[in-house]
Amino acid sequence: MISKTKLKELAAYRLQKRQDEEGLFVVEGPKMAAEALAAGAEVVCACATAEWITGNAWLESGDFYEVSQAELERLSLMRTPNQVWMLLRRPKNNVSPIAPHSPLILALDRIQDPGNLGTIMRTADWYGVRRIVCSRDTVSCYNPKVVQSSMGAVFRTSVEYVDLPQWLSDCGLPVYGATLDGERVERGLAGEQAVLLVGNEGRGISPEALAQVTHPVTIPNLGGTAESLNAAVAAAILIDKLIG
Image (cartoon, rainbow, N blue to C red; front, side, top):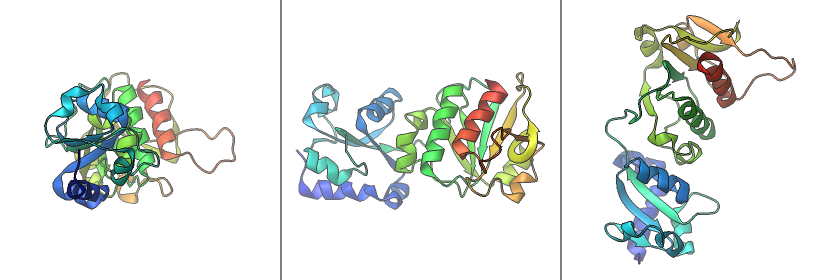
């Protein structure tokens, strides 16, 4: 069982700042817990209900606590906490443990919405795009909403934060930039290594990053009425066009 003092200590990890300071992150629910264990993630601490413990007896040793539903709610950021809460160590080496299936590198400029980043990571995972390079003002891939919406992709993709315009300038690769006035993608990369750059949800690609784009590309607005596409949707369509 967990003491009130320990529960209060762990509840402090609801704050992103606390996680960042200690190089930790949180996953919740049986699905994400299974993904973490399958990926060999370092479990710093785990709390779970009796229901979850029944099928996961290996965690009955170490820094592991059985908690009630009410105690789980004290730890969780979810509206409906689901059986298990885990505190994990962030990997020091942010390299995907899985070899890339595609020659594409995904670059993200100023993506702010956690749900968008998590969905983009999940899509990249589906297509075997294992490397994602982000501007430093893109939301953290360890934001709890990003982690949960990635559906395990956080364990299978490398996400790095850099001075993006400089990185694009130095990478030596063709840069396909998602713009409203680019050319329609007519063919895939055919094995060519390249970068796909997707910009902010409302403002698009920053001028500094846009200056490094060698191939402006667009998704035709066939309906002619919508102003723009969601960033995660645009990324998915362009990834499919380039390597699908």
